[in-house]
Amino acid sequence: MTITQASARTSTARAPTPRRRVPLEPYLYLLPHALLFFLFTVYPIGYGLYISLHRWDLLNPVKAFVGSEFYRNLFTPGTPQADFFWKTLWNTTFFTMVSVPLLLFAALGLALLLHRPIFGRIFFRAVFFMPGILTVSVMGILWRWMFDNQIGLVNAAREVLLGAPPIPWLSTEGLAWVPIVIGTVWWTVGFNMTLYLAALGNVPISLYEAASLDGATPWQSFRFITLPLLAPVTLFVFVTTALASFQLFGQSLLITNGGPSRSTQSVIQYITEEGFTNAQYSSAAAMGFVFGLIMLIFTAAQFGLMARDVKGARDDRCCPHHRPAGPPPDAT
Image (cartoon, rainbow, N blue to C red; front, top):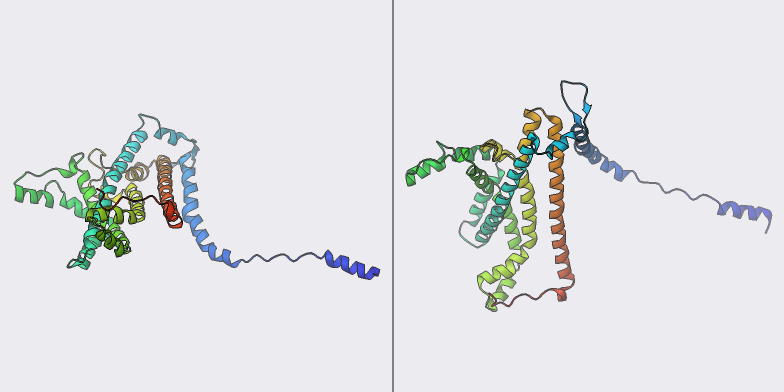
């Protein structure tokens, strides 16, 4: 081997490998969404956190840094922020605990009724779904008028049919929740009903036929066939309905304006009042972050339930021999 050949081999072995070109096209497609996400999500969150750590006054150019003062006010008994924030948070929780079960059972009941081949089924489906297309302002004004203390339709019907005096629905603590809860159920039950109708359409009829041949009653078929197969949809409806109920705002604002004595005021309504009516922007920002943290914890717990349900369904499909034996058809 000559010196020239050895030198050529050495130079060939040491030749640098070409760098792989990184494609820019995927990032260009993501750029518009990334800009909008940063502009309307990341920046407002960061700016809100900055406001909550300063004494924010629009008339004062100097924004003094106060640290966690407004967060401490929320956990200091006796301060107006702590009293009203936790009171309105309890109001929102109470509304969620009452409205979510009603929306679940009412939607499931309507779906079971309208899933049967009855006359006018499509018409009734449309009737129950149509309130969902109304705006919250229309819905709130409608139910405020229906439950008005003097000229409301409910009080007028009681007087005509029963001869009973009018009930001050909107100015009585406890009773003021009635139009809010009933109006919300009437307004939103159609969407959940549609989800249940779609799920019922996917239940194999052969399962009911086999259960009937084995002597199962309609209640047993519903308990051991319908309910288990509707479990994923029920969990989805529960999660979405609970999250929507925690965002109560328009119904209580338009029907009762949070009264009487803040008994129906939601936490979002109080945060809005603190920020835009009382001009306490730092306090409102701190309340918003605390409420957002509570919602994140609640949402994480709900998604944990959904993940466990999906994992259990996957395990049942993959390993059917590990599935627990169900009760016999004649079980009570």
